[in-house]
Length: 262
Ligand SMILES: C[S@@+](CC[C@H](N)C(=O)[O-])C[C@H]1O[C@@H](n2cnc3c(N)ncnc32)[C@H](O)[C@@H]1O
Image (cartoon, rainbow, N blue to C red):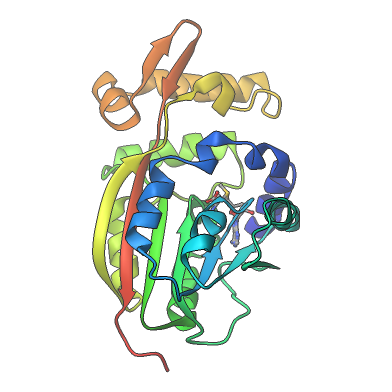
């Protein structure tokens, strides 16, 4: 069986151009909340994990001393460095690296960010233990990711639908599980926020160019089978002719490294 890292690289290597132009990733509540939680003072050595084409790293760059931007997919990293050159951003450097194995010395960063990516990670506890290792004592970790509602039924539903559409999806945890994993990894949670991404067209999101019609239909059927109250409350589903619009719930966490750096 293909490893998760291979699936991620296969998926994202095709989408570097698309991500670079995606307004959904370039801006929005998930970026605003991470900047608000990070609240940089100007001197921070910062690491942005799974940077994609660099939107979070570029938004932080003018507010901190230096950003190291990492990603598992080399094509994402080269697109991000091309964009940094074009935008003459000179305090961001790039490294290809897995979130679960960060090639940095212990206690070497003041701030770590990670936005819209851990649902693709093979091993979230390992990722959290790496973030803990490379942060200085009292360093800050700011995370935003898509999450499942706190319901066994909807956790299973959402992860099945996401995986059908994109095989590199691993798992969207509910917020309670994130809190447990983050505190269990030696962090103290200082703030949380619930938000969501912008409404998306189903026909755009489902990637009909990539997914065969029977898979698109299976996902459409799954949405149709949702209880109408769940569809409205958790996924903001709004019919629009042959299409419909919806969003995913997102969860943001600001956490301090609470145990001393070794
Ligand atoms: C939606 S994009 C990230 C968006 C970006 N953080 C931003 O703020 O615009 C998800 C990224 O996660 C990366 N990724 C997935 N699994 C990874 C892993 N285990 N380690 C590092 N990067 C990973 C993918 O290569 C992809 O570039």
